[in-house]
Image (tube, rainbow, N blue to C red):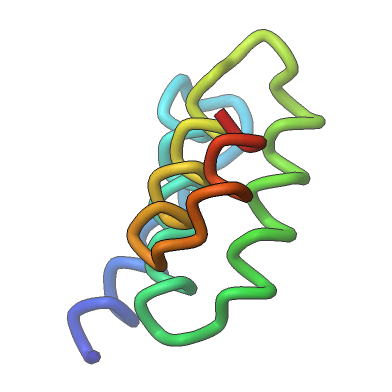
Length: 79
């Protein structure tokens, strides 16, 4: 949707020096999932998890998206 596209542009503008950067990346992944670009969303979440190994948020977000798709085994692995 146009709202998702606008939100993605805003999130993409948040630089890596910002304390909001990780959350902006997570929101971009959620938007990709909503747009039906699941493979890109999952790859992005994996990349965020590698970049922020101390954060559980990328793994929780991935698990939540997989659970929403009823991919329960994969969701459990992500969590």
